[in-house]
Length: 168
Image (cartoon, rainbow, N blue to C red; front, side):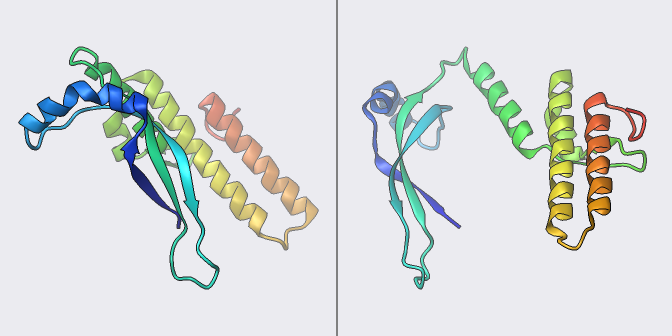
């Protein structure tokens, strides 16, 4: 497992963006600020093969922007959408329809486009895992492989068309 390390130095653009927030943060212990950051790779450490150390990569915050109070809602909404896309999960029911997990549904907040993104991402994750399992079975015949590929194609079509498998 590679370890991510943040360099304590900031890029000039990041320092400039943070300047106005230093004193208010100092004056309010325990406060937090929302920020959009960009970080840049600056160093890679690859231990010797016999070493018990993990490889690491060091990054430096190169750019940073802090939204104003009137902008925070928009940034939080983007943050929520990115979190949902990264963590969307679900399972296929008996009809081959994807059912989103309760944790995914709880993050959606009723927004239809987010439901669709979560449904598609969770479905794609299912079919990627399925294809990987099939691909790892080296003893499949060509005929069995064709059958499995057809199963994946039907599943993806059902996911795309939001229909039960076999009806797409």
